[in-house]
Image (cartoon, helix red, strand yellow):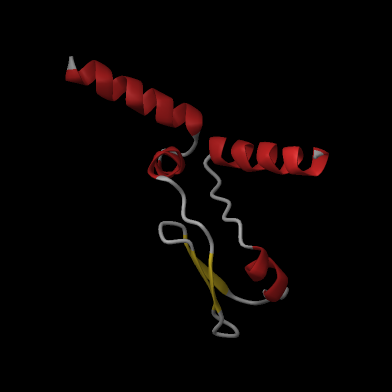
Length: 88
């Protein structure tokens, strides 16, 4: 339970600072050091350009994408507040 709890905290902290972390155990197991990789965070597709293998991670929900696009939780909240103030 502690490892799972730590993993969730790490994941959420990464999102909060705007660092997109995709979870894909298969990709983690099959991608080797030195492989060239491309990642599409919107679709969750991870491509190993070295081997041609493709993996599918769960894409982020829309609200997490907005946090990442703004560079983290704090910049997202500031932008959201400014947008609301400008709408008044």
